[in-house]
Image (spheres, one colour):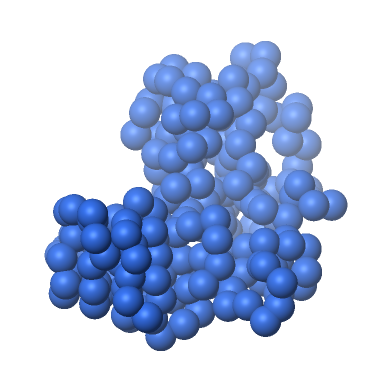
Amino acid sequence: GEPGPGQLRLRHTVIGFNFLDALVRLGKYPVLPELPAVPGAEAVGIVEAVGEGVTGFEVGQRVGYASGFAGAYAEARLIDAGVVVAIPDAISDEDAAAALLKGMTAEYLVNRCYMVGAGEYALVHAAAGGVGLYLCQWLKHRGVTVIGTTTSEDKKELILANGAAYALNSRTENITEIAREVSGGGVHVVLFGKGDFFLR
């Protein structure tokens, strides 16, 4: 259809798939409206049409979104222009579609949940996952000492290579004891960007 006021019509080029999508398919996140419905919350595409009152977007422009509402698993869709961002030329469609939701999650954790600052300590659980790797890099950039956890010895090097000062195996090491020792009494914040943690 044609976009209404404030909307864009997008032709998707790449659709993101996240752990959240797996949880929706398992029925653990009831985010879909009544079936039949189109799932998917993250995609990149080309603007095909611009609705009345929309500024800052034009036909042919590359854009992306990671929204709280479904509809990405489609060739094309209508979407509110307010949830869409322009994709810079230097970023591929694939990279953008894989990064938006994870990047937004990391952003709110480090900027809105607790503003972690230089000289502080952060314990990042699931540090080898998509959100965890963003958190490790972002926090190191801010001057935060990052203690990252994983459930695999193999992933420790990945965590360290992405900004963590310490990498711990939560299956074999006492995280609480080590974190207290490393931080001199306790970390300033514990971050866990793995969505199903809150569902158990």
